[in-house]
Image 1 (cartoon, rainbow, N blue to C red):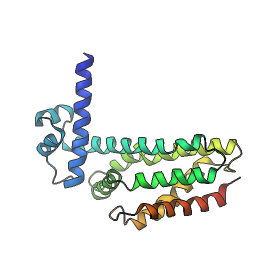
Image 2: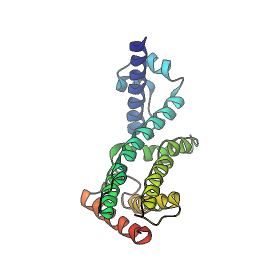
Image 3: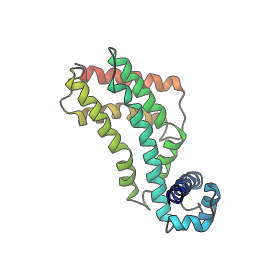
Image 4: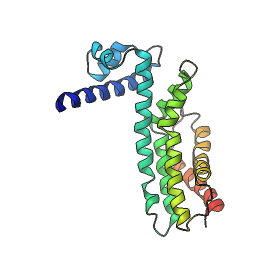
Length: 206
């Protein structure tokens, strides 16, 4: 029974990953279930056994991609748990990692699909936000609240502080990458991280 359940979970994961790859490459309208099955390494009926139709598959693929991206970004916050003596440097490290993750291929593909399909699937904005940005903001707020309690920051509203930290990073990034269609060199990402943290520290450092 356990082996059967594990196999079903693995197939579902393969289908969701294959679907996201095909949707990102072809767009929703042009993607076909046969191509998704081929990408996932399963038979076409297997796709329908797991997902009732193409629209359901699209929603689930978007949610799975957003969650995978979120896991990486929450892991990037880990240095803030024990920042050491140089909080400024730790914030820069975290900021740089978040910028790199935000500009990787999977993240850019997710945003492009969101922008292109939101008029046909208005609910995917809530799906992606709950599985991504909203939870990242809450996780960052928790880290910043702990730093405030330790006297490292003077933030009285951790949620607002987290929103502002991310806005300092991602606002300029969206403009410079032209909504994810232009790649940036790592040196530019490091400069952006440094500038964002400099502004953040001036506002919130204890």
